[in-house]
Length: 209
Image (cartoon, rainbow, N blue to C red):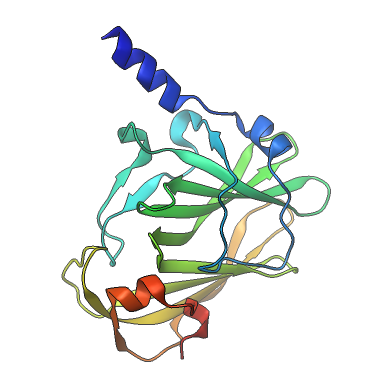
């Protein structure tokens, strides 16, 4: 029992937002979350009161998930930060692992290091990208999602999926809120993607027509 408690403490230990923001590297805008993006440098975060969303998805429809808080092997990591003016940080946070299923969240943090709002912008499984995003240098966030045509749950490890890509656009206001600018719309035709294609392809979702 003592050993288990020590292991849990080691896995759970992390930085508060202020400390993590002070030590993580600063990203540059515009920013594209590409398959070749990396993001291996990170700092483990504490998430008191679960103020930052911590869903980790298990299917392409993004309807089945568990919460990082409920699994000793998962957690939140600050991957990068962007500055918006002199009093606002935009933090890119990974929920989950690099190889395992992971969700990426943009979280705005004010000068008092308080979370303003979070927006889910990325979902990956190994090299598969179910959601990707781009941030422009004028506070716009473009979110792209691979949407299956089937309503039946398709696990992320499936051999193929018939799907199309949608785009949703947000703007970030002066206090760090994500404001919907363009509702989700289809931006590609429907096609069947093999697992190998999704894992090994060099294309990003916004490149599909």
